[in-house]
Structure formats: C-alpha cells, structure tokens
Length: 590
Image (cartoon, rainbow, N blue to C red; front, side, top):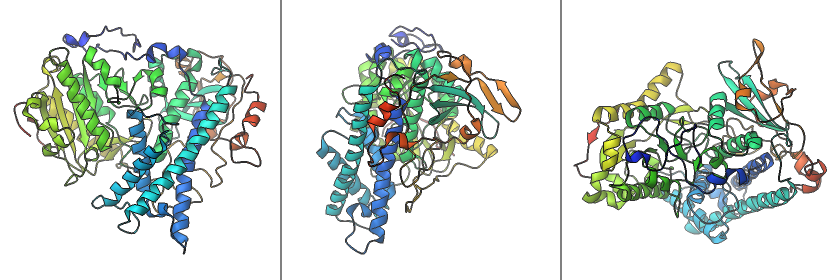
C-alpha cells in the first residue's frame, strides 16, 4: 500500500466520523510494487513529443497543400484544425479509460486498426454536423469525404505511433536495467523565475532537454514519491513531459481546463474533500488521493488507475474506504456519462456500508447536443437515465447553476492561470446516507463553494486580465488557427530537426545554487533531491530561464534517413553509461 505524507489509515476508516487527517491509499498491484515497475527514460518522452508534433505537422501540410491546389482536394483538407485537435484529445481520453491495447497513450494507435478508423470517422462526421460548428471549411461536407479523411488521419497516426514503438523496443533492448538519475546525467537546479517573484526548479537531462516545475510542485511530488529513489528526477521529467506533450493538442482551447486550487481549498474546508476523481500529479491538492490519466507515469506519485476505467479503475478503493470526492469529468460526453454512471453505482453499492460524497462539476462540454450553451437540471438524466428515476433522487442533495461568463476554470500547466468560462456549468452534490452524516453541508456552505468559482474571477481582476485563448503556430506552416505548443515547449522548425534528444551516460549533478538579480545563494533543492552525488552544475542558467525545451535531433538521426538511428545512440555509450441560487433537492424532482 502507498501511504501519503506518512499517514497510515486502514481501509474502512471513513465508516466512522471523518477528521481532517483521514486519508487512504490506492490498492493497486502496480502501486504495491513501484520499485519493480518500468520507468520511462527521458529519451522516450522526447521522441513521443516529436512524433505527436509530426502528426500535426503532416496534417497542416496536407491542409495547406489542399487550400493552394487547383486539383482535387485531399479529404483532410476539409477538416479544420479545431476538429483534429478535439478528435485527438478525445482519443486520449477514450484510450485512458478503455481496455483496448494501443501503441502509445498520446498518439492514436489502437492495435485494432479498424477501430481507430471508425472512431476518427465518427468524430469528423459528428463535428461536421454539430449545430453552429465550424468543423468544415466549406459548409457541409459529404459523409464519404469525411470517412476518407478519418482513414487518412488514422494512417498518419498509426505511422507515427509505429515509429515510436519501434524506437522504444530497440532503445529498451540497449538500456542497462540498472540505469539511474546519475548514470544518465539527470540534474536539478533552483533558479528565480523571469520576473524574480518565485523559485523554479529546472530538471535537466544531460544538457539536452529541460523541464521546469515550481518548487512547491516538486516538494509535493517528492512527498508523494514511492518509486526507486535513484530515479526520482527521471520520474519527474517523464511526468512533466507527458502532460506538457498532451498540451500540444489542448493548450489554448476549451479542452485545457481544471478546477482552480482556491476552489479545491474551499471544498476541503466545507465538505472535507480528500479525493480528486481526475487530476494531474502536478496540480493535485495537498495530500488528496487522486486518479490520473496516465497511470504509467502517475502511479509512482500516488496516482491510481483512471476513474471509471472499463473493467474497474481507481474508484474501486472508494468501496472499501469511502471518501469525499470532487469530480469534474473529462470534457467528452461519452466518458463524462461513464463517470456519472460509475458514481451512481458506487453510491448504491456503498449505501449502508461506507460514507460517500461527490461534489460534481459539469461544464457544458460534458453534455451531448445541448439546446443552449448552458446545461440545466433537465439535462442531467442524459448522462445517466437513472437520474430521472425517483429511486435515485435520494442521493441528489443540492445544485447550483454557474452561468456563462461568471465563473472561471484554471488552464495551462504548472500553477496555471484563470480562464473565464464562456459556457455554463452545473455544480451538484450527491451523497449516500452515511456520506450525509460524515460530510454534512448546508446551503450556506454549498453557496460558498459555488461562490469560489466566481472568486477566482474577482481575484484575477485584482492582478490582471483573464487569460485568453491564444497560441503560436508551427513555424513554416500555414495555419488558419495556429496550434499553441505547451508553454515550456518551444516552437519547432519546419525541418523537424529540433525535437529529439540524445541518450548518453555520465555523472549526475544536483545544483542548489540559485542565480537571480541579487547573485547566487544556497537554495532549498537539497531538501527535495538528495539521492544523487553532489556536484557543480556548471550550467549557464540564462538559457534555462527561457523555459524552453532544447533538444538536438542529430543524435537520433543518420544522414540519409529520417528514422531514429539506434546505432548512433549505442556509439554514445548507452550500454555503459452571478451564481444560481443553491437549492436542496434531496426531496425534489428533475
């Protein structure tokens, strides 16, 4: 069992009145054997980023060529960029919550090829027919063209995923099984941010790639970490890269949003929330239990399988321990419905057994075919018909309507920034009888929770304008709506020569020197990273402060091929080296 923050709570503790110190752990076989799990090497994270970028670049090239061509247009030229990004992100969500094998968790790659083709075809057809959608560039597109576009996109994705899988296989065959942070030259340095207002930790892999993380986030990860001590920095690097790579697709769009930390803090105070049904390890609140999207990188930081995963996910622990849960499902209607269905199953199965409470946030994007931009109580049964059955109304306690333009969510990676929601959301409370007893909440407390979504806006007005959706296009490409890369990932050149990284052996170093306007000072990094040899970082941190990922692709490529050059890798020594009024609906109706 994984114990968070040194707390050892036996299963079933929440069958008794809750105290603020109660927590519980994920009973996951992988969690219980974290010292024996496979840890992703930085090179794999970087090549994955290259391949996902390659998928988007190929699409953009086809689209640009189609718009300039006088001959027959390529089917993908009829699909706009927003639809592509939505389809790719929905695939990631479906893959994470399903059981169908895939080659990679970020690049669409179900091993059942027809399944991927069918999925993309349905996404393109659905988006093209959505009322008011701009999914196609020239009005209504024929179903046959959309089907051809889906097949073409599937082929692009499969090729990139296959290339990544081949690289992974050859690379792991040559990687020493006892590699460590030191042997692959992982290092960490504490520096001041560009504006000098906060401390940033730069985690560097062999001076070829860096990721940034706040000191507080790294401290939280260190506290949660249950993996091999000698691979802590590599684990953090892989984690940050995984979620930043996903943001190549989602950044600057409605797809990239989460509940603000101030709201989670309010939930902690008002209803003792200790479980986050969908969270990133980088932003999970304090010692909360959480389910993530990517268990292969989440698990060593206390994360469990995705909530509502087909066949059973992280929610199974709730049946033994109970808990107070905050749940905002993925912004994909099928998976959102699965979350609600799983929640109702849990409430019913745990009734009379343990305490369960769910505060549920449902943005408009969780619903299919809304009649307006804001959901209402009448739309809830569309996620699970049982919510229209009076038998299940006993679990439904309260509801608040969060109007469009009057509440915010958090976006971007790291500590994030607030973004005004242009669509409405629902805030709901579900509890079984024991949950009602152990997590009591009245209208006033629930109103404060709803108000916290608006407080994010008011707090932001005091510090600056609300973040708007914006981004930077891929260099050398024609794009009507540019794709913004992750904030700490640079714009790459059109030759695709600056993405990959090199695999090298060597000596690791952990720098505690922070360079700022006032000179150098001893930092706090040794408190967090203390499993490697000390040494002089010897790096010029001026380049690091830019927050960019700098990688040399030439180490992975031969002069005559676009494929990864494994032989070149081995030669480098890898082998040795205004908010709606709160209502009590426990006795009401839909």
